[in-house]
Image: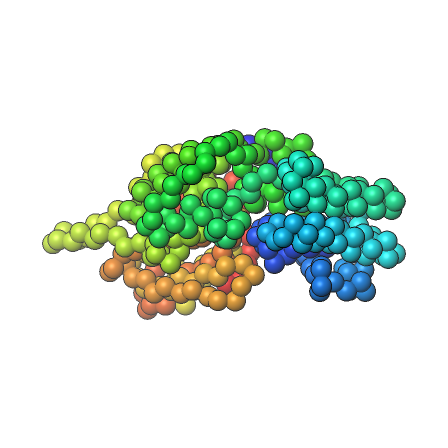
Length: 375
C-alpha cells in the first residue's frame, strides 16, 4: 500500500479550499481534519468576493481548487469552470503572501475534446499561468472516476447509484459495460492535500469494469444484510465496502444479534468475518464514563455491548445531527461505526459496562486512523 506522508500536513496549518460543500470537498475537509489543518473556504461564481478570497489565500500553505461545473448546459460548463479559475487567479495576484502550492482537482477527461474536458483543461491553463507568474508550485491532478462515502446517487458516480439502489433492496443493471479507472475520494483528498505524493496516484487507482463493480457491491450487500462482514482484505474492497455501508445506515443500524439462553447462561455471536485480518478487544467502563469521541477515515469498527446499559452516539463530520442508540446486553445488538463519523459510547447504567470492539485491521500506533473529534 502507498505510504502517506504525514510530514507534509502537520497540525496547525491552514489551507484555502474551493468546492468545500461538494462531495470531494467534504472528503478533503475530513482528510485535513486528521492533521489538524483548517480549511478557509472560498465561494466562487456568483458568491465570489475578491476581498474575502484574497484574505483566504493570504498566508496559507496551499490552495486546493476543487470547485467546478460538470452537470449543466455546454455554455454553463465552459464558462463556469473558466470563471472559477479566473476568480482564484485574481485573488492570488491580489495577495501579498499567496500560498506556495496550488493543487487543482483536474479531470482525467481534460483535453479529450468534450465540452467538460476542454473546460477543465482551460481552467488548468489559467491556474498554471498564475502559478508560473507568482513562482508557485502547481500540482495538476488528473482525477479519474471518484467513489466514496456519501456520494450523491444518480449524480456523483455509478458507485453511489449502485450502492443506493442495493441498500434499498433493488437490483441495479448494467446498460453499457466498460472499464473504469476508480479512485477513492479519501485517496484523492490525500493527493490534493499533499499527504500522498503525485507519483503515488497510479498505485492508488483501481481498474474495474462496471459489471465487476456491481458484482462486488452485490456481494457486499448479500453478506452485510445478515450482519456479517465480507472479505475486505485489499484496500479497494475495504473502501468500496465503506462506501456501500454509508448508504445502509438507516436500514442496518443497529444490527440485531440472536441471543440464546438456558439455565447455564446466554450465548450470542458478535461477528462473522469472511476473510482478512482483524482485531478484537474488550473493555469495562464504570457508570457515567464515556469512551470514544473520535472518528476513522478507513477503519471498519463494530461495537457490541455484552452486559450493562449504554448510549452510543455518532455524528457525521461537518454536520450537527447526532444519532443515538440505547443498547443493553440483555438485548444484544451490533452497531458498526460509519467511516468519517465521530462516535462514542457512554455507560448510562448503574453497573459496569462490558463492551466488545472489533476492527478490520490490526492497530498500528504509527498510523492509528483514530482522530479525536467530539460527537
